[in-house]
Amino acid sequence: MSSLAERISFWCEKIEKNNIWRQKECFNLIPSENTPSLLVKLAEISDPSGRYAEHRTMKGQEIYFYQGTDFIREVELEAKKQLCQYFGCTDVELRPISGQMANEVVFKGLVKFVNRNRPAGQPFRRLRMVMNNDLNKGGHLSSQPMGALFNLVEEDPATGKEKVVNIPVRQDNPYKADLDRLASMLKEYRPELVIFGKSMFLYPEPVKFVYDLVKDWPDRPVLMYDMAHVLGLYGAFQSPFEEGADLVTGSTHKTFFGTQRGVIAGNFPENSPFKQLWTDIQGRAFPGSTSNHHLGTLLGLLLSAYEMNEFKEAYQTQVKKNAKAFARYLKEAGIPVEGEEADGFTETHQVLIRVKKFGVGQEIARRLEDNNILTNYQALPDDTTFLESSGIRMGVQEMTRFGMKEKDFEILAGLIADVVIRNKKVKEEVRRYRQNFLEMQYCLPEKQAVELASKLLLSILPSKEVGMLMAENLVKKAKELAD
Image (cartoon, rainbow, N blue to C red; front, side, top):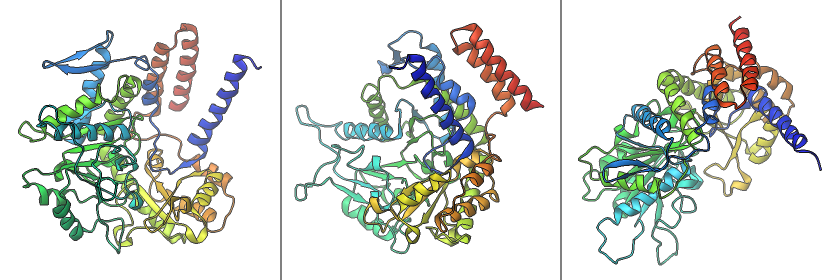
């Protein structure tokens, strides 16, 4: 059996190779991913990592159940402040550690809320009816009965299926809602919860349209927007709270370039009929769903929230420009692009291509990966099964952060066409082209970040001598960058 040092060394070498491949040799176009900045990454491994800071409101006070938590309490309060500023909302709950958990917390909180007037001794009821986006039309898995809605929606006795209806889509463009049918379905089904948001996402959701229809109902539905994929485009793409949404959930590591966590944002002024719902959601966050809510990634989220608030407009503008340019260049290169050309094919970071005439989506995605272009295969709305996907789903957000502009995507689109249409081997050409896009944008300049990183490393490492050695290497690198 190999020694501990040999086993660890083996994996450290593999980690190093993977880091270099993913960060310096590949174009990452997976729309649900991003790379945090250097300082955000270092925050993740700082002392709060592995600590506990359980807390809840008791008798009007926020009570913490561990000592040594004053620092992380400041972090959580400041992160809430920064994210309330980002969303323009009244409330933020940060304890969910994923977008899926954020959704589940909301659903559980809503079940508690609808049972608030339940007579003593009567069993809790589930949600009577939910409206969401069809999974086969791009809807989020976490918003389905097989996902976070599991066991939280009533069943139809006649069919044995959950009482969930889907937002209807247009026949001529399945990526947009059919508003006429949507209006009639709302009247017919009168859901208690409407869930907007998708994972295959090109156009805004009909939030204002629905709000205007239901706002005067005696018991109107809660309007929730799962913005996981477009959280980092809040405001530039769509502003759900301004359109009447009550809740926004999402992951904080896709277009929002933070750590891997979840967030729930609420807009509940004091006179809101759903003010109690927010209290129920907080109770389902803790103690209902989490204990340790990953304090290292919470610290990283704070730093990324500062970055996002500072560079929001420039980053969001470039992402949208890049996505439209990328779609146009792919079309010019001979690859069918989903969406309407008159709309520029997309209003988000995502670009969808149809590859059926060149092969099955899974095979095309693997072919692209073999050439250092990372995407994910996707079942398009007219596909019968995900196992024979016709589409490839791509996002420009990460490569935008590494400095790509509109014209840069023309070359990348040509390389993708070489792989998809002509089955050419372009791995070395891709690797060389990626060398033009290695410095991260929309954060502190590299030199300044490295200087701060050296100090953080000194504070993290237990041995002063080892810390000094690593810090000296980082300072050396900072000086090289300055020269």
